[in-house]
Every structure is written in C-alpha cells, then in structure tokens.
Amino acid sequence: MLGLSFKSTYELHKIIDKHLPVSRLHWKRVEVPLLDTSHVSVFWYRSALEAITALWGDQRFAEVLHFGPEQHFADKNRHVRLYSEMWTGNWWHRVQEQYPAGSTLIPYILATDKTQLTQFSGNRQGYPVYLTIGNLPIAIRQTISARAALLIGYLPTDDFGGLGLSEEACKIARQRLFHCCVGKLLEETKGPGFNGIHLASGDGVTRRCYPILAGWMADYPEQCLVTCTRY
Image (tube, rainbow, N blue to C red; front, side, top):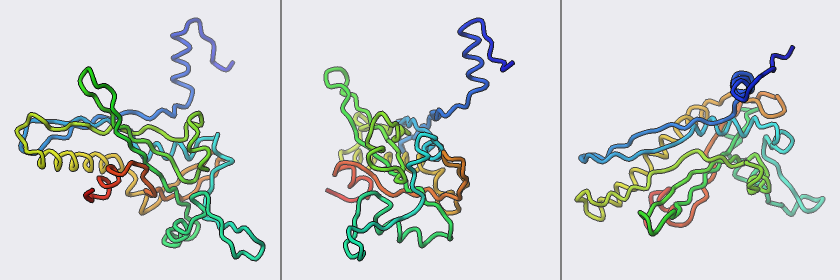
C-alpha cells in the first residue's frame, strides 16, 4: 500500500532516491585561469546558501536555534552583563537594528585551515572551507558528531612555481586566487543578505532571514590574507 515493496537492493535504492528527501549538497567545479599564462586553477565548492538552509532547517537543531539577540545579566539589578553565545553580544544588537522589524539574522561563520597532506610523495596540501551558523550554541557547533559545521569548499593550493614568475608575483597571484574563489563561494549569499529570504526552520516556522558573514576562524597568516593586510 505504501509502494515500498522491493525485490533487490537496486530496487530499494531506486525507491530511496525517488521518495526520500535529499539534503546532500552538490559539488560544483570552477576553473580559474591565471592572467597572461596558460595555467588554470580548479576550485571545488558547494553552495553556501544551500549549506545555511540545510543547517537552518535541520530538525535536530529545532529546539536549540536562537532567532534574535539577547541580554543576560549576573544580578537582579542588571548591572553585571554576561557574554557567552554570539546572540548575547553587542554586535548582534547593533546589526539587528539595521534590518526591518521582525527580521531574523543568520550570522554564518567560516573556518579555513590549509593542511599538509603529504611530504614524501608530492608535497600535497588541502585547503578545506567549513561553514556553521551563530544561531547554534557553541557546544553544538564544536561537537563533531553534531555535524553542525558543513564542508563547503576546497580552495586551490597552487603555488604557481615553474611559470617564470617572480616570488612577489606568485604571492600576489595566490592572494588574488584566494579572494576570487571566496567571492565565488559566497556569491549566492549577497542578495539574501541585503533583501532577505524566506526559510523554514526545523520547527516548521517560516521566517524572513538575512544570512550575513559574521566571523572567520583562521590562523594569523590566513587572517591577514582574508583582511588584505601584511604580516
């Protein structure tokens, strides 16, 4: 009666693919050419907006999501302010005032860390980008098993050696490649960040949400790279 009868694993997989909702984020491939050379870098990424939507609508987080700024105090007279989660800080209050009444902010956080994969067989590196949202408590965001941080991209690690470029030119090329890829990665969030987008949270309630970049977790060299400063 439910149409779930199957005679083989293949038929079962077909039923799953057809009837069950899929929350997987699909990978996309972009080629980034280096100006005045034949070199092409490859950037793999997944939609940041789809990642935000997936975390926002995850039923596992329905009871722990926070939808607006709060103020916590240590005393009844409200003289001693307590700061803990992102929504208890002054930043969220200031930003909230810039949006229409009833708006829901989704401050998303990126994390990057270039990682050495091999040393004896090609000196390979990986450059993953993770995304989470500040509406979730820190304890959940930092728990690996909660899957509250999603992998949304692998930044290129090309060093541009062997192209006849000077060391300074290679450094500039790596910086431009980084920002070009990050711009592509976050492109879909710009419109909703200004104009809003209707999203349903895990409790089934639809709100007008504004996803904005609120933080970036990285080591000091990467912080300088993100902010276009020297170190």
